Each structure stands twice: as C-alpha cells, then as structure tokens.
Length: 109
Image (cartoon, rainbow, N blue to C red; front, top):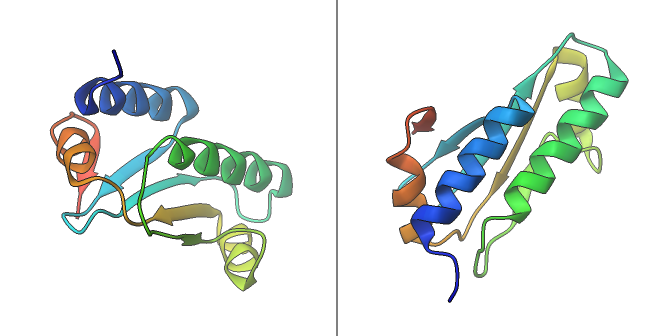
C-alpha cells in the first residue's frame, strides 16, 4: 500500500518545519520552498539550496521543471547577496497541492 497524498503532504510539511523552510503552493501546481539567512553567508546559502531541492524532490511532478535562486544561474548570486533561497517546482499533482494547502503553516498564493 502506497503513501496517500495527505500522508505525503503532512510528511513534507513536517520536514519543512524541521529544516526551517517556508512552503507555498499555488492552485496551478507550483510548490515553492524558501529560507532566509544573513545576506552574503555562503554556507547558509548552500545549506538552504540543498534543503529546498531535497524537499521539492519529494513532490512528485509530471512535465514540470524546477527553478529559482539556485546556484546554477544568476538567481543564486542574487539570492545569496540578498539573504534568501527560493526554489519552485511545477507540475505537482493537484491532489498533493490541495493536501499541502490544507495544512497549517503552508502558505497559498
């Protein structure tokens, strides 16, 4: 028997809280994970990026992509300089998005 969307959402939200990440969902199936830190703190940025990518990898998606202030582009330099890491993933199951949106502490956009 597999994990239900509600069980997965609860697990993702709990892990986000443990990692100090904020999670936001949109009705279009986009899930965002973000964390703020002291601007210019490279180790904090690296940790935030790893945690955001790890958390979003737990969200099954179809035909989506992942983007944001990641270190593979100019967004990473902007995020690090300004003290935040924000990573989005699209194509996430609408059922999982609805389950995440129902959890206290998960923001909806």
